[in-house]
Amino acid sequence: METRQLAYFVLACHHRNHSEAAALAGISASTLSGALAALEAETGLALFRRGPMGRYPTEAARWLCQISERLLQATEAAASLPVEAELQWLDVVSPLHLMLGRLYRAAGLAARRVRRDHPGLLARIRFHSPLDPAPLDPPRAQGGRDGGRVNLSYSETDTCDPDLFLFDDEWVAVTNLAQGAFPDTEIGIAALAGLPLELPPMLATLERQGRHYCAVHGLPDPASVDEDLGIFSRLSRRTRDFALLAPRSLVAGGLQRSTLRALPLAVPLRSPVVADIGGTGGPGRVYVGALRQALAHPEGAGAYEPGFTLRQMRYFLALADERNMSAAARRLNVVQPALSGQLRKLEDRLGQPVFRREPQGLRPTRAGVRLEALAREIVACHDRVAREARAIGAAERHHVTVAVDPLAGCASPLAAAFEKWLDIYPAARLRLVEGSATELPRLIESGEASFAIAQIHDGAMPRIDLVPEQELGLLAARGHGLLDAGGVALRDAAALPLILPPQDHPWRRLLERAARQEGIQPEAVAETASAALVGAMLPRMPVAALATRAFALACPDAGALSFHPFTDPRLRTGLCVLFSGERGLRDSERMLVRLLRRTLQEPPEPA
Image (spheres, rainbow, N blue to C red):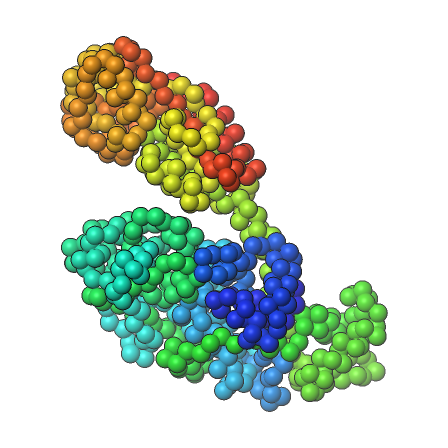
């Protein structure tokens, strides 16, 4: 991993395709591709994936891009810092997950402008990343003065200090409406009312604004979805129309590489972005001024010119620590002429010596002292990548999304299986979603879910049985006296007020098939696939719900409910794992399935 390679990688992250990035760097597309492939091999990370509109940076790439830019900013500063300049560090942090978005790109441009106009003032930029467990407060750099901290975020109030205001971030509707089907360049309230509305994960302030906007304009309350707004991995595969509402800065960076569109809202919604300089003083005001300029007049991201290599930085630091050429060569396990040659190249590039040769050894010059602070920052960034990339790669490989039928009634066994699985894969990430009987296969086929825990049905999708047989019956509150103890005949059940799942659910299909053979037709007073609604309705209403014994035991007030299996005829169902035959299951996913089956083999006995 070298500075030139990282400069090519950052350029590729900031441009729509690799050919465009290669042209800006003045290299061939094959040279860029080779550098990126080598970086992926060295870090163990998948950095780019192919999408419908070109290759897009993954979440791991955006994490690495942020650290790489910090390293490259410091390397450029090391190669160009005037002799008389005093090094001053300014930390620019944000709780926003906006890497490669408008604000992040402007923050990087502003840092380079500040360094050009105010030599010695170096801004270290850090936006929030879900892959970065470290706090937002960056560690203090060694050497130089502390220039303070600037915080970039959305305003918590409707009014903000004009001196802190950066820009109004206008909300957009990210949608899969095709240009031919919806040629408008903005979307109105009437069009939004006809679409399922969603909100991505974002700050609580923004979520409140989005929901308030919908309530004021008579729109349904949006659903919350877990989506990566940098690559739109799930949204771009949607087949049904939708509209996801979000500030433009959250989505503009990656949308150009997908099939989706971001339409401005005809009735606008704006969220002010502000900078808090606290007690930063002059350095903070200088940076905020450059940031405003970068936001008002954005430039294309040009290639970094590092000037130095990481090898030269490591060799220099060994000399700074040892103060002796022979000792440094032994520490680095290189011959002394090689070390001398790298030092000579560094000093030639810098245009001045970094050490004075004295009888007692090497003594850093003023330029050497300043370079040491920058070199330690550069090497620390590189070491962090090497240290954390392996863990992130493991998490990527074991990132499992499980879709679950909400009526499965297996929450406790699932929790036990997940706990054991995370002990085996401690760096893994697990995501759970609920879906209807028809939604589960779609989630699997689109890649939104690794596999699904579903009721056994007669579909063609590959499956692994977890619980082959479960009794199907009726669940009712004991206090209503709706059913006698024991089982219930299907004909008697059909005469009761029933809560049934939707008609596409395997339980419903099994019940109606048996009812047709008996010449009867059960009627539903309510239809729902929500376990929470079933559990809330039963104690309040004299109704019975179609359920399995496992579902009955999983209800919060199971002691106040009674389960009555069908006896004439007996109806049995099962629980299985559905997965894609084209993709199959990874080893970590198969391990999770084995643990699920084991925990479900011996369900708890009823109280």
